[in-house]
Length: 432
Image (cartoon, rainbow, N blue to C red; front, side, top):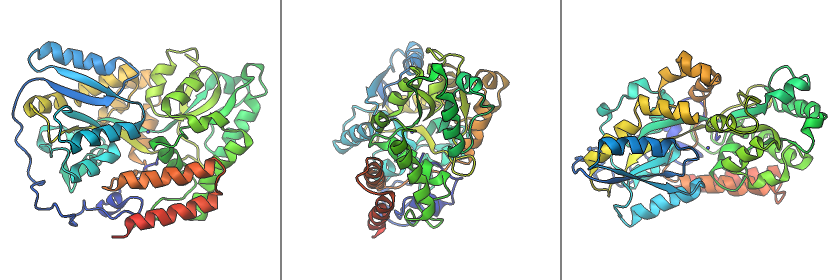
């Protein structure tokens, strides 16, 4: 969903993200004695709900149906939320603030764990009951707050570059681009083909929502910049960060990115690519399975994201399962979370919906690699990805990023002014 994620930073750096000083490394936010260090008792059995974004594939409902068949007295009802991640987060927060038991198991974006845990909206989980050692370490770290487990990964994610392999081949482009300049050069060749008439070069997710935070961060990181420095302080008003933002701004100006992409979220970009409107698309792994069922079947290649001078940086995306503190039937919920986050269930997500799994072994499985040849590259991408800020104030930080980046893309501000203003915004959030 890039705020490309650099390696698993040390505790203080990871939790400070975007210059916001966090409480996850032992500092106090006033709730250190609230009992958060103790796992709650998981009791009660019966019907529960699973709350997540609407799945564009049937996999989620199929897995729930299989559970319900085996647990007729503990059925799970799937509550699909809007595709917009900001709306998802807001609906979950509203449910928590009213202490409603309508939501049981929550599918959280990886950057929400700290916020939900700090507000005591989700329960601490018994880490020993989940096979965390078999999972990719960066994904497990996103599920922790103050060193304790508050969620369990069931989907990892990293941004990748989709491209029309048939058109690149016909245009004489031997391999996918590793830099932005190479990508634009490849587009120039492809656009001369009769089959490419009316196609645009590239798109990502640029509507003012979480996807813009991801794409902005990926561009900044892929140009050698950062949103925060090694100590976690805002450091986005730099020449390197400007080169990253300039790539996006200039691409809108020169037509590399079509004007309508300013409205794109994940699904709009996927549909544009599948309908033959784009040569290149930045998106998540889930797109591969759907693209292979569309008119571009057999014509899709996948590569790492390009950058300024070489391979770019990907965001660490993904989703974790969390248990609402206000839910009923928590014993059932815990068992369902084990089932839904199991290697078997996540393998089903990979096979049937190309959703990146948290389990390391699946990236090396020959059968899986045969079906999804990009898995080894995706594994490397996730292990070296740059995390978005996992902070209690994440909502304010991402809103600031979206506001300033969107202003630059729309031409309301220069890249330099947008970054200067963003630096100021993040410093204010970091001030106690």
